[in-house]
Image 1 (cartoon, rainbow, N blue to C red):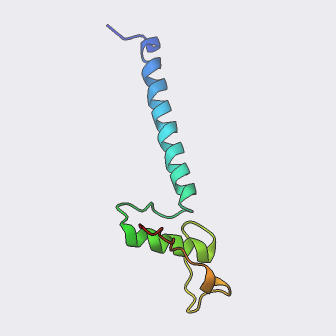
Image 2 (cartoon, rainbow, N blue to C red):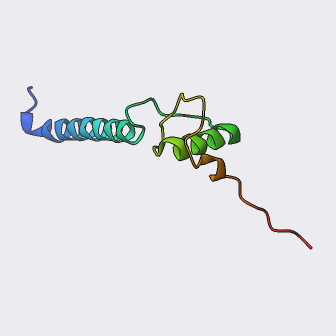
Length: 86
């Protein structure tokens, strides 16, 4: 006994929506990472270097290969001062 195609329409719609959502999420992640692979399992050192690169280049995933820092970077410090416990 054949199955009417109307019973398979919901499954086709669900598969299409999963495909559209997966493609959209992959495109969004690629756009957020400036076309580079996402970074996983970051430790504190990686985060410090990422903030340094962001301060030098102005972008989240940008890196600079210059041997010297740009002018004004010597006063641009990421370290925060701690409050004294008295």
